[in-house]
Length: 204
Image 1 (tube, helix red, strand yellow):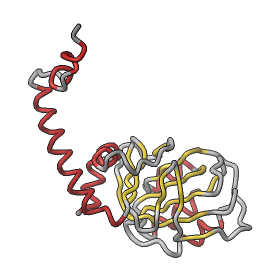
Image 2 (cartoon, rainbow, N blue to C red; image 1 turned 135 degrees about the vertical axis):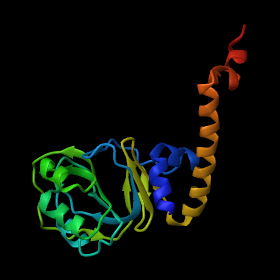
Image 3 (tube, rainbow, N blue to C red; image 1 turned 90 degrees about the horizontal axis):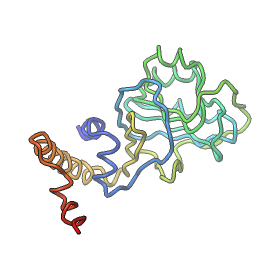
């Protein structure tokens, strides 16, 4: 499956294979380190410091999706806690990406739903603004459209537009094959400094 291949390849490989496109250029903490996930985005653009849209987006979540939560100005306000994460898990979400804060961290870890977050903070969100669900959102300089593939691992996050998925899978396969060949050469004792011609360039 394409999503499984991209999850296994990882964020760095997907980003590099796409010509260094699609990086979600923010620092996200995985609450369950070691997990790698890829799935179509289900988005919620919350009102500022408000998580009413998170409650609404749970009614749309389908199995295998990555729930993407953000607000106009990201702040350390908890958009997600144990009760909302329980809903996401029950709906079959593959993961949640929170461009804000989460709380109930011990409970979230026990739940087993992979969550990536910018902050851990108890400060609660309001429920006064509807916000919008299933709309394009921008995080870390990357635009994420509903249905775009979001890739998450310990390195961070990247997005692949749905229209580019097949081409990206091909590019990732090619890059992995190339890296496997290089890894074999490095294990045999060759040095990238020589193979890439850097020594010759640096020679007086």
